[in-house]
Structure formats: structure tokens, C-alpha cells
Length: 216
Ligand SMILES: C[S@@+](CC[C@H](N)C(=O)[O-])C[C@H]1O[C@@H](n2cnc3c(N)ncnc32)[C@H](O)[C@@H]1O
Image (cartoon, rainbow, N blue to C red; front, side):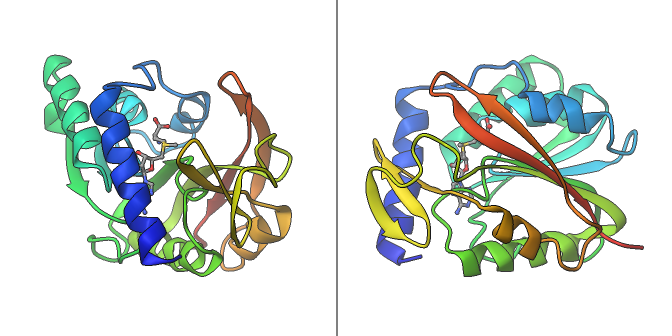
């Protein structure tokens, strides 16, 4: 991904959270509710692209220790404020981090990784592969990676400003739309991926929830 588009996206997300604090609300997403049941009780969850934390808060409420990362300091500040209010701050760590760089955690240090609509941001196919390799590195053997992405059946696919590599921009937001070939290629050193289709929001966004496990 070009540095210009990446920088523009980070600025766009920052100003979006500044203009619309708590924009996703504080009900957890459907995928977060579903995967929380499959994550090991009391374990550690790394959430990538956590935004203002509707799902990190849910994992903390469910008794997990949560490490929430996002490249928007404003999103994470809103998450910390809410965690303070809800008495959950002791279970949540936040780190400002761009997933185009290595995850700042040791090998095999988390039980589960969750990323809702993060891998389908303005990342090139190469950057997505590097990110999934990093997720595999920080997960303990037997740990689960659950992520969601908008796919090529979404109404915004192949429309708006084309940036190449299946990335299209609408209203300032750039999205990398996934096909099954990409999903399968990201699971090569994992257990076979389980893929569930679902929808979210008014458009609606058409998404897949993908779950794959790091072999023991
Ligand atoms: C569609 S939002 C989803 C937010 C959150 N997962 C939720 O569902 O409430 C995508 C999030 O990814 C973050 N993001 C986008 N590109 C990123 C990158 N390269 N590194 C880290 N975070 C990124 C944005 O700041 C935003 O919070």
C-alpha cells in the first residue's frame, strides 16, 4: 500500500472518531459475541483494529484480559474512558499500533486474536499476509484467530475510487474486498478456516467471519 494512502486513512479514521465519538455504539458486534464462547475462559485476547472498543469491552466483561490495538489514539482514548466508567480498566491494555508493522508482543503470548473489519482496511495483499504471519507468531499453539472482512459480494465492491489490489474507496474509507482465494491462502499454516457469511449495518455490509487455529 502506498504511504500516501495509508497516511490518509489513518488521518481519516482519527478525524472520524473525533467527529463521531463512540460511533459504533457499545453493543458488542455479533461476531464478538459468537467467538467469545469459543475463546478459552479467562484467557488473553488481542484485539486488532479495536476502534473505540465495543468488542474489547465485551471480552473484558466476559472475564478475558484484553490487549486492544488500533492506529487511532482517539479511538483508544474513548475505549479507556468507557472502560474506566464500567470498572473494566484493570482488564484492558491499549497500544497505538499500525498493523503494517510487527505486533509489539512476544511469541506465543496470547490465547486468541480477534479483528473485526480490520484485515479489509487499506492493506495490500502482501501486508495482509505479513499481518497474519504476525498473528500466528504471537498466538500460542492451539490458539484461535477470528477475523471478519467485507467480501467481493458487498455492494461497494468494484465501485468508487479504485486503488488496485481489490481496494475501493467510498466516502474517504478504503476497503480491501476479500475473495475465497485470499481467505484460503491466509490459512495455509493453520487448521482449515471456518467461514460464516453475515451482514452488518444499513448498507448492509456483506462480511465473512473466519475462524482458524494455530496447530499445536
Ligand atoms: C471498520 S473499523 C472497525 C472498528 C472495530 N473493530 C469495531 O468493529 O468497532 C476499522 C478500524 O481499524 C483501524 N485501522 C485501520 N487501518 C489500520 C492499521 N493499518 N493499523 C491499525 N488499525 C487500523 C481503524 O482506526 C478503525 O478503528
